[in-house]
Image (tube, rainbow, N blue to C red; front, top):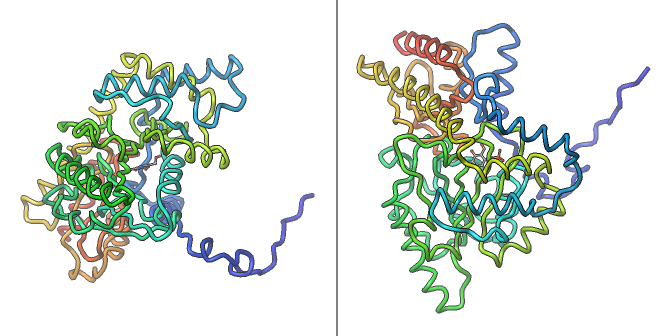
Length: 425
Ligand SMILES: Cc1ncc(COP(=O)(O)O)c(C=O)c1O
């Protein structure tokens, strides 16, 4: 019989006497999700709007993708892929962007990884020197963890609901002369909003001008990491990119993308970064040494499907219809409550899988903090959400994220009814 392995009581500081390791933080969102699962295990009725993932029963991957991966496995595509990604996949991504986004990024400068995260990590580690300033709007997904991992200095800029929580040039301008990197994400996790062309164009033109100034002084340019992992999930809005709007941005832009969200394939792990050619070498080595490449069969399958976009277009259209339908249902429910005078407001979703909702309850009914609000919505309305504070937004606003990737229409209706009772009570 096997015995349980005993590890004794050595504390972390003695086992890992490295300030870098000791300062590492886990994701707030995963901790919240664990609490919900524990509550569900007791038999409680809980609608889980916390996770930025899909329930495969509600959102399976495209059939063509499942078939292609199986075929590639059966054909023996099981050995190491090249660390930068298979040439056919990099070529297919380049062709797909040319067709859909209107610019041809050289295939040799596209680096494939296991989802978007390793290319994001490699980008930060490559372009950030310790102490460099990294400018990013909040609320924003996980950027601050990558700032930590690259030993940069976080310069968060608080955004407002009036701009869909997107930064304006005026918000960023005070930091443009000193920042090394600007991280932008659209469609935005956690808000479900999309940056408008005019806003992004203005920001890009200011960056081009700033980089001209720096070039004259021999200084390093300001680079933009543009995270567009949700870009095919946009409804009633146009997806725009720095390079598409201002071609002079190409030497300063790193595009981050993945199939994770738009093919509901978070578990297949295929993502990439399209980067200026000079940055490619060090990023390639980093991805190679950590072994963060995508599976070979998955890469082959994705390459085949991207080369023939008509095969997956109906799938993406269907995803958009269900996601926008569900998000609108949720938004309409909150708007009706608001019209009744209940203390809630929401911002219409234009992309991704999220809705921004504000509960005006802080300072009332014994609710003092965003964490109190989260806990009371969970215990009294059976609804799991993530407060914007988990995305670096200042405390005390009552803004929260609803994610619909694992919620059916009946889940949405039942949750709205419980929230209504909670708010009216
Ligand atoms: C904005 C954003 N970027 C990147 C990622 C990471 O994507 P992947 O699962 O492909 O690593 C996520 C995942 O939630 C995200 O929301």
